[in-house]
Length: 322
Image (cartoon, rainbow, N blue to C red; front, side, top):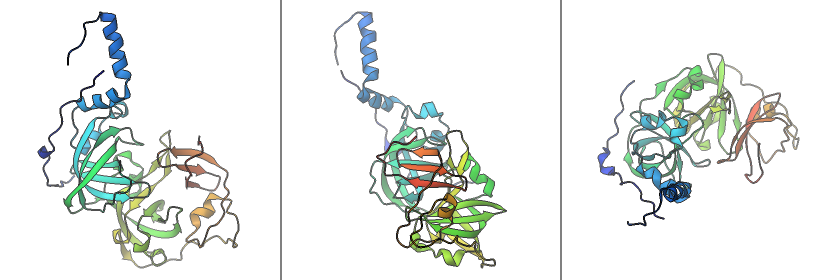
């Protein structure tokens, strides 16, 4: 049985600049046998993969984002030229943007290193994503550097919008508290117009959270709000590369939120206590009971909600989660 892929795509058709705008032969067989052979061909994994190559190449992020989930699962081939706006190597999250929008990329190589402003030639296939279609099984080649696109100014309610996800943006707020995360990142609790959201800073050493407490800031990053299966918002988040993306507009004026007292070696029993921690020296035992409302089997991350708060948990990955 032979599967033939579609004709390849000429990558030279993609312009290198990034501009941003506003806004064989076979045996004759009876008909019944032909139907049977066709069914076998379509059920072959290799043929399924190659059959996706007969679909037209998608060369802009807007084309991918407008696909319906069932269409994205057909694995359209993708060839993009885009600029990196966010990269976190730990969960291997790459977000790239072209003149038509931004999108999440899942890479084949989990050891790659990218920085904001890297211009990438991306090849992969479409897949169903948490909110919008994404690109999976991707390869990325750095072809140069480019300025980041102009950030879209957001208000806090925009972080709830699926259309705003994966778009390079900025938002104003006051940093009320911070906490060391289990993954080595820093979580900032930010108040914007009386509504709070979490900013996740990837480069831990590029910012001093204590000096930012109470400060009015403008933060640049990518909305990465987590949604449950029903579409409910689990965590309103802005993904920030480092301290250089946080501009202090006014010095601290108020007192930071107090840290809940915890004795040395005490077991943490509430999610709110974990979220309120600013730093942890050594390991502190945590025992929580709650409801799992979100689970990502690819990255082994779940969201657990107890009566006090909700929190993300990185699991070992070998235990079944429901």
